[in-house]
Length: 23
Image (cartoon, rainbow, N blue to C red; front, side, top):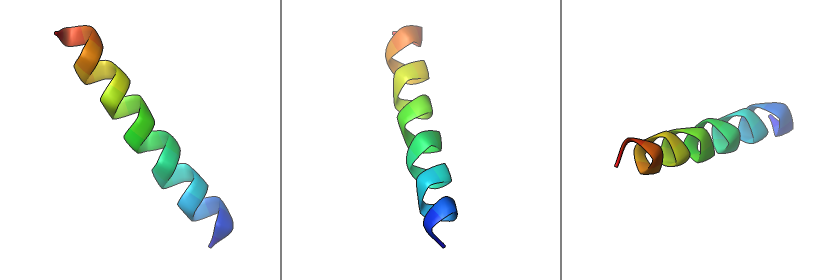
């Protein structure tokens, strides 16, 4: 479960960065 939570956190962080870059 630990690795899963870490993966989800990284994914959310990446999505946030991509959205900021687009704008």
